[in-house]
Length: 115
Image (cartoon, rainbow, N blue to C red; front, side):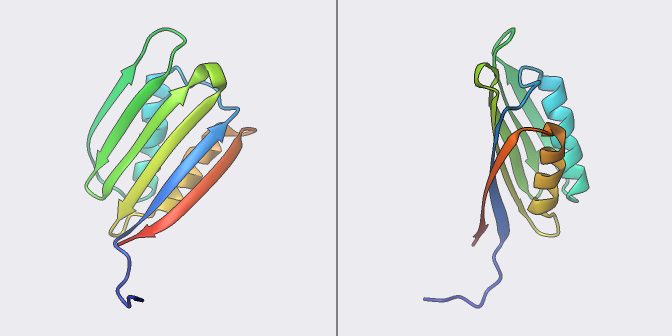
């Protein structure tokens, strides 16, 4: 059954192979905050956990428009970002902002309209 109703938001899964600085929670939080702000989202909270020296990070920005999260595996140079935004915020702008921080890495994007 097709719907004539606009989707509520756009959800993107961003896999980055060959990424560096994945054991730096401050770096990851800063790039995610910039991505959210650039996309027109409102940050309402954050939490980042570093698993130890030279180990991965898991983190989330809670947005009025939903969220941006990350999980990293520095031993594999791999990061997985999850970006979901609704309202006037633009997921694609956040994806571009995050991607530019990982020049030279292989980036795989999957995106889907939600709702």
